[in-house]
Length: 256
Length: 256
DNA sequence: CGGGTTATTGATGTCAATCAACGAGTGTGG
DNA sequence: CCACACTCGTTGATTGACATCAATAACCCG
Picture (tube, rainbow over the protein chains, first blue to last red):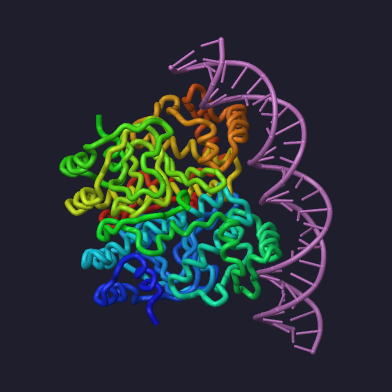
């Protein structure tokens, strides 16, 4: 089975077999971490970059009064920090939402890989840009979208991100959603109760079904419209102009 | 006068005179852009990285229904995109909030600078990490902080960011706040009306005064406490462990 | 002087938080 | 095998924070 990190990066640059061998070697030493445990705690001086191999993880920040906000959601293949360098200390924490397998990547190794091939370099920067764009849309959700819009947007985004790494059942547009409603609340800046009611609304309107931690999107177009989802920010076909300078037409929100 | 870009990067790495010369040469070609104009519009294939030399700018996203969310606020010295590479198209827009001077930096030039010296490389990655951390705290504000907390947190953050580039009057902790209340609403995910009322509350409680686009923080400690502000995420004394491996003690939220 | 932008205020409505309770499922230990 | 605790999802009632709508005043600019 191809590693999800590679599967994802293939969307960012045309990788050769050689490229993939080099990248594959980054992902050797792994650890298993239980659900709800910290992968990297707040305040620590990290010694490696965490890369999710299997399971779901998140970046979160806790406020002094106990409120928690999940800032980023990490799926298999996601690097939890920018690849260039290690922060001197963590101003946030990384935690496992489900049991996860984490690869411990050293920044020197990943930069050596980037130096070894412009395509690897391109793929890594593409990944960084996409991760930033995901965080930005998340911020827009919290600032300007209603509860059902936030949920709908998240489900559309996950549908695409999981498709990129082959974790979606295409026939019925369904995938595993292994997080609790409380987690969704912390992710979307809402209370657990309100998540519950908004999910019911999405079910009632026939957009989704969600049972036993499995989500099926019944009406993908409807969900996209409802939540103002535009997949452009995920740059699913590569997004860089440094190496590939093919032109772009008809992209994005305003032109559709 | 030292360029704000340099002033800021000095907080991220110990730059030599040589280093600063190299970085200074990146900031040559500039353009002037009027308030409210786009620096880089949504959907465009950008040809350079915008760097704010003077004035305030922002990154924003507009939804189909007209709602707008400002995602990042850019002050003098801020690079508006990650330095490594240009996106193939803009999934957001960059706009001037005040009249701004923008330097047009080419990614090849900035990467050449990074390759020329490990300290420049360190400073640029530090800047990228800090910019990400600022966006994360912004997201936490939208998700989990009340209106007055959001404003207080923003004012504390600006106080530090502007201090780094020498734009704060230290005697009275005051600085220019050249944005409208409507802009603040779009930044903090609130309505203009509610911004107005929350500002009044901060004034009434003696935390701040704000007149004629000038903000004075009357009670910095009080404002920090009120808004759960912890400056650790701005890594004001350098934050990387790749080159400087000095140890860290007593940092951050949980340890205070 | 008229028109635009910005700040301000009041009245009203709504979305979502909070508080509280309950049931189903699961795992555990006596 | 059952009592118990615990997590998770669900529901009802109430409260609260913020949005929306509308109007006005101050200011600047041409």
